[in-house]
Amino acid sequence: MKTEGLGKRFGDEAVVSDVDLRVPRGTAFGYLGPNGAGKTTLIRMLLGLLRPTSGTMELLGLPVPKRRRQALSRVGAIVDEPRFHGHLTGRQNLWALAAAREPEAHGRIEGALARVGLRERADDRVSAYSMGMRQRLGIAACLIADPELLILDEPMNGLDPAGMLEFRELLHSLVEEGRTVVLSSHLLDEVEKTCDAIAIVDRGRIVAQGPIDELRAGGAPILRIECSDPRRAGVLLRNRAGVAAVGEEDGMLRLELAADDPRAETANIAHLLLDAGFQLYRLQPDEDSLEERFLEITSRLGEAA
Image (tube, rainbow, N blue to C red; front, side, top):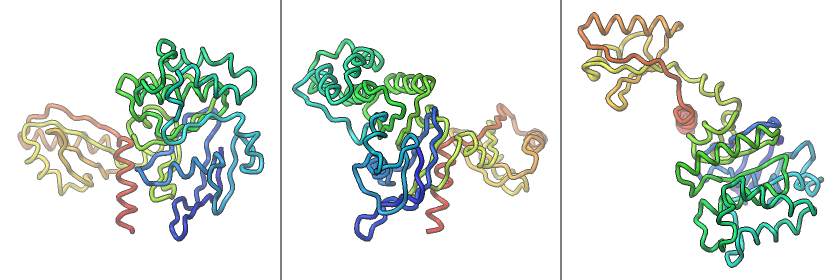
C-alpha cells in the first residue's frame, strides 16, 4: 500500500495533508494517532469512499480509484464500527455478504467463524451481540474474501483484555500467512504489541514513520532507579551533566540520560548514590515506550504551533 502527497480538504479545513505512506507487504502496520487526527478519513479515501483533494494512492500495486474494483476484490476492511442486520444471525449475515463475492466465499464462512471465536454464537441474532462480538464478526466478514490486505479501523474497540490478546494472536497469524494488515488505532500499547512498523499521525500529517524499534530508539536512554530517598536523590542528580531530565514514577526515579556512553554513566550514577549514603535497591536501564515517544513527538509539535 502506498500514498504520495495525499490530501483531503473539507472547505477550508485540511483533514489530511500531504501524506506519504509506505506499507510493506506481509507486515502488521499501525496507523497511530489521537481521535480526530484524520485516520478514518485516510481509510475512506483508500477504499474509494471519499475522493482525495490531492495526491495518489495504490492498493496492492494497483492505482486507486482507477483500478479500485480490481484492488478491492483482494481487500478486507472495517471502517468505523462494523454494521450488520441485527435481526439476522451472525452466520446469516456472512452468507448475505458472501453472495456479493465469488462462489468460493461461502465455503470460507465456517472457517472464518471458528477463527474469530464465534462458531458457538454464530446462530444467535446479531442484535444480541456485544460490541466486541460485532468486531469479531467484522473480522470474519473480511476473511470470507480471503484478502491479501486487511484495513481495520479501531478494531479493538469493545474488546476486553482477553479479547485483545486473542485478537492480537489472530492478526499475527494472518501476517504469518503472508497477508498485510493495516491497523488504525489510538490504543498505543496494543499497536506496540501488535505491529511491526507504524506511522504516527497528528492533525492530518504523518510526523514519524518506520519500524517500531527504530522509532523507540530515537528517544533518550532511560534509567529507572529505586533507592532509599528518591526525592533527595533526584535533587542530587538533577544538575549532573550526563542527565538530561529527572522525574519520578511509582516511587522510582526516571532519568533521561544525555551521556555519550549511557552504560558508563549508569555505573557512575550508582557509585555517586552509594557514596552519598543512599540505599540502592534497583537500577534498571530502559527504553522509551511507544507511548512516551508518541507524547514526546506530538508535544514538540504543539510547542512549535
